[in-house]
Image 1 (cartoon, rainbow, N blue to C red):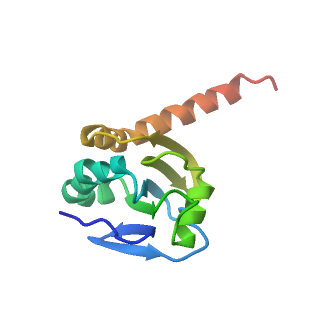
Image 2: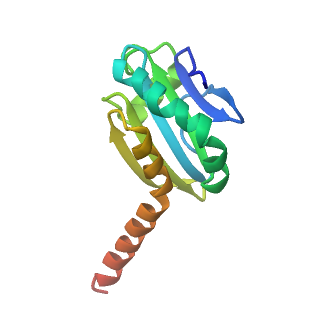
Length: 157
């Protein structure tokens, strides 16, 4: 079983290892899909989410989604939101993304080093739902982009 980071902080999962981010806050820079988990130590639902969905995702699907979906997994952990956090990067990241429920999962699309689309899910997602959201993300993204283009085309010139 993949172990979750024990300390407060922001971590990126790469090749089976959690790499801690030391910056003012975390913001995606490279193109691709980011799945970002916001967790609190004193959150029973967060602990269940880790056991029942996140660790399973890392064990069973990480290699596949990291290659086929260019997906990166980010884990942001505080004791209790930004108001009780022992890591400045994590605290500022909770504030930047306005996280006020835990667990919270963000799916973020980055193109040309800019966030072009994001989705937020508050609460614990079942493993099957989490996988479905990741695999169908590009379809939802394309649909939103097409709808925006249609709206632009409808505007009078």
